[in-house]
Length: 493
Image (cartoon, rainbow, N blue to C red; front, top):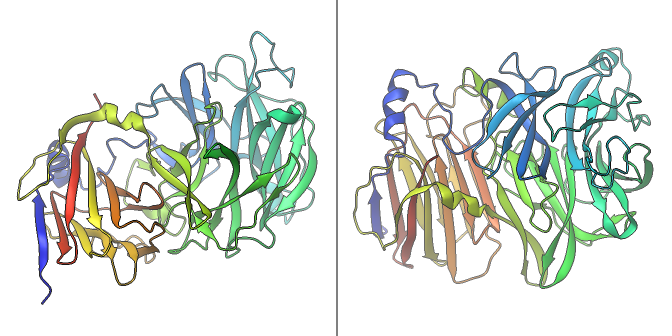
């Protein structure tokens, strides 16, 4: 029998007040520090833009039910990416169709002439999905439209000459992400086109021309491509282009996931010499993520914390779905190859109400908040972290040295009966080669987000226990040592 040392029992009553309410109503799964809609259905984050001190978060929204329906754009704002104020719906369906996914930018130079130089417009670019035409058998039922705001996003006006890009005859033609390409003073759009992306350019956001395609022979093609994003990151003073593309199905652990490509862009075409498919997250529940515009060199990513395998059926009543914690993106180089890394935004530190910094022995804690567990482990050691409740429901995560894999096992994590596709164990090969593993867990009521080796491997998973997980046990075997750097409690002030 293998001896496990050391063993730390952290009685993490993650939310004591929540524990009492759950016993009365086990469907109260709303998280503490993740964005959720007040009511109704939510999926993809849309139109992420920072303008005049506020982060604008738009999202795919059906306000009249908790399953997917005719899409609107919901809207929330924040000055710190954590405390969100939900505003009235920004965009409603119209005669051109539902309001599908897209992006938003500030037209600072008023290239569209929809505002003025003193009051430049915010521009939303989105897909309109005409379900009536779809049901008739048309293949041109998705087109790209725009709307503009002259009052910092409070109210929106649709462009009278929509659509600005008409469908050329492709059934999946959607999810425009627009960026400003400074060196040529023009706008660039990446658009999901069934099994690849198309790149368009424009001088004014109103008239667009096709430039190139990418991806027909690159990456995973196990499902439809969606929600692309194109941006730059700097590594050792070198600017590198990154293209992210979501795919459904075909993720590394089933269902929805987001792949990425590292390469170059010349204003017309994106190229990549990447030989293998790389994923921004290896969990089941990080999909359709995109970055904020208007944040300069800082790239802040938010994803939808669910999976199309079961999103319509998760056991919440008045609302559906949450977003991941916002994450800073960066590049790391391993064996002369670029990898995308993601880590929780530093603003999260503002929510810390209690912090322990010690090598834990056997200590009990009562924490009325979400929890960040930050630890270091010898890379030749197996280790497990187990969250458990009074009903012995549990979620287990850790690392197996022989397989060189991180994993999350939610097969015994509570209610899994709502979908045959939910109960699962997610695994990912370790990317880093360091002798120490840095393992960070962000635990909220019904989710765990893992950032291994400073975000080189991330795993995001949701779960629905019948009672909150109140105990945390950390174990490492004889081959290694484990040091818990910090344990932090987080709550809104």
